[in-house]
Every structure is written in structure tokens, then in C-alpha cells.
Amino acid sequence: MASSSSSALLVAAVLAVVVCGAHGIAKVPCGPNITATYVSEWKDAKTTWYGKPTGAGPKDNGGACGYKEVDKAPFFGMTSCGNVPIFKDGRGCGSCFELKCTKPEACSGEPTIVTITDKNEEPIAAYHFDLSGHAFGTMAKKGQEQKLRDAGEVEIKFRRVKCKYPEGTKVNFHVEKGSSPNYLALVVKFLQGDGDVVAVDIKPKGKDKWIELKESWGAVWRIDTPDKLIGPFSVRYTTEGGTKTVAEDVIPKGWKPDTSYETK
Image (cartoon, rainbow, N blue to C red):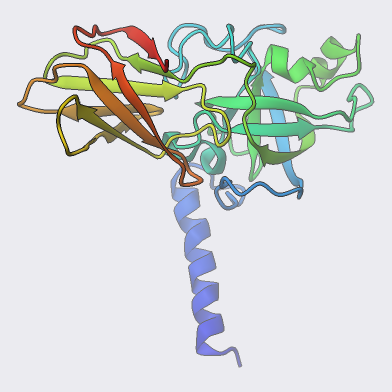
């Protein structure tokens, strides 16, 4: 007979599958969320691609993360949608993964790195990456990119890795369209290392206390306040690995909506 602790674990596991299924992944187990613990272990997944064969994914609205112009630096179109345990209701936005395939024959077997910029809810595997056409082609042997794309759905190995953007890349703070002195929506992107953001706070110049922003959608964090938000103010962001970083006075006095500001 199973012990009471063993029975409790079994019930918890069953409940986890049921809850996951309720979120739209009913045919396959969801798997645990991919955390910022970097290990050499490779996991199994499936990958597909979308858009144009050499396309870079959504260029304007950034998909479910809210990133803009993912075809340009530093993403360069090396982007992917992630399903539930990868996208994590937006907290997976900006995280980086190493992918490789060995079958079909067009696969090179060499790893390629992509950044999560969108979500995908197709229930084809516990872990499912839906890559831009450009990123999908980089898993192929030279000259066989289209042959690999023609395969459509490919089994791969993947692992979480630290994001390494080109030298000189600065952390970007985009004040979203629609922001006003009483409402601020902010996207923090291009983070080296963990890549993702799990908390954002702001502090007006001359003030002692940090003001917590709430998750809005994707990688967008927001605050509604009766007090006018007058710059400059600093932004403190926390990554999944627990690293806290402060960008001093990064949002200037006279800030404007739909505008990006960078670390100095």
C-alpha cells in the first residue's frame, strides 16, 4: 500500500496535468516551466515554423510579448513562439534557448539560439517551439534550408541558455503607446544573461521609495496612478534568476509615449 506522502504526490501530479489541460494543452503533458537554471541537459521538443520561409516573424506588434521590429538588431529574426511552459504567461519573453535537430537528413545537428518573442498554444508536444522561417532554416545543413522547412514539423533537442547579444547592445526601455502622466506601460528588453523580466519598479528622482509595476500582458508592465508621473525616474528590473538591476534616471523628464530609452 502506498504511503500517505506518496499518495499526496500522485494526486498533485494528476492535478498538474488536469490544470495544464484546462489551459488548452489537453492531448499532451505540459511539462514543468523552463527556469533560469542553466544545465547541460538537453530535453526533447518539437518545432515548426511560420510566416515567410526566410521571414523574421512579426515585425510590428511583436506578437504576444509586445516586442517591436524583431527582424532588426539584436534579435535579427532569430525568434520563436513558445508554448505554455516556455512562454509562461509572458514571463518567458526574452529568454533564450539552444535548439538542434539530427533528423531529417537536412538537419545539421549543430545548435542554433533563438529568443522567445511570442506564444504558441498548439498541443503537439510538451515543449513546442514555433520558429520564424529564418530561424528554422538555421538548423539545416548549408544549402538545405528549404528542404528542412518542407519537413514542416521536426523533433529537436533544446536547453535554456544565457542570452548573449552583440557587444554594445544596451538594455531598452520602451514606453508604450497610450502612456500618459497617470498611466505608464513599459517594456524592458535586450537583457544579457537571463533575458527575461519577472518584476519592474520605478522611482521618481528625489524619492526614496520604489513603486511596483503590475504585469499587463506579454512583456508589458504598467502602473495606473492618480499622481502624475513626472520624469526623470529610474527603473529597477528583476530577472528570473533573481538579479536586480537599476537603470538610473533612464526615463527622462518630458518622456513621451511610443518612445524607447536606453541605458547610458
